[in-house]
Image (tube, rainbow, N blue to C red; front, side, top):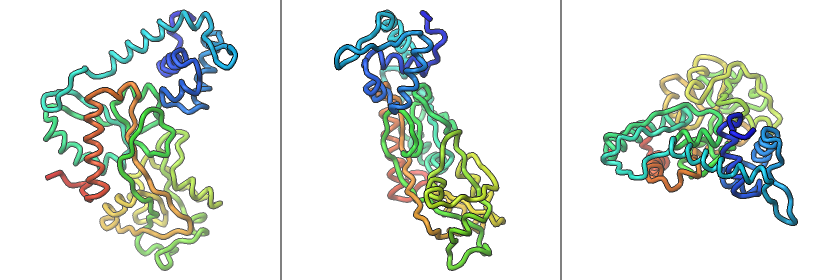
Amino acid sequence: MDDLRGIDLNLIVALDAILTERNLTRAGDAIGLTQPAMSGAAAKLRVLLNDPILIRSGRTSELTPRAQTLQPVVRQAVAEIGRTLTLRPRFDPATTERRFQLTASDYALAVMTAPLLDLFAREAPHASVEFAPLSALDPVDLLREDVAIASASRDVPGKRQSLFSDTMVCIVRRGHPRLRGGALTADDLAQLPYVQVNFADGVVMYADDVLAAAGIRPRVARGVPGFLPVPWAVAGTDMFGFVPARLAERYGEALDLVTAEIPVPLPVLVESAFWHPSRSSDPAVLWLLGILRTVAERIEFAGEADQPAH
């Protein structure tokens, strides 16, 4: 294969990093991929190109003759992707008409959207934000999006910065027959019907990991695609589920829900912003990250998640 038409964009990004760094570990670091993911990409590339790409030379690696001929072609391809998907070099928030691309979980959008749009209205009145639901993220996804907001525990490629945290809580309907002294036992968690959150294929929720580590296998009765449906699924039933505490506080009274103590410690949820390394010097993305930090501080410290800024 000489024209790269059989290689998807993810592999072009990976190939460019390998050709530049000449080392899989450094290549993975450059584009935000873990070592196993980088090794997998390299294996696919070797098959597609019918070439080892790198050959050992003493303690270092060198490009094969074929890889050397491909390097300028790949560099040009990546440059074209960058020119197509990145922003104009000049950026003034007061005058820009830029439409920002933001991917986030339903929970992050629920607590961030109102203050975020308020700041946009004041600082970038002609700009807009296009929101997309969170799914599996790879380097090309981060080239398409300006910023993705996801749990810090997720294996997301690219650069990151922490935004805000929340505690996970267990919710049940008020007056649940198994609730004793505000608590559920391990047996309760194993026997009661469970509302499980499924964000994307292969993504395991924090709480599921905790239950599994404690040897508890809940009886999954319903799967939902995010945190927001959980309170409605639990309301009026004997099911239980896990949500960030801010959602339990927001919807608990209206849906007649309470939080239940459980015999295993629930982790802290940390939401982080992720972006592609190639955007680290983009002034528009840097501005957006600053806006997200401001919103996150209000959520974390001022409790203004659902109130417009004043």
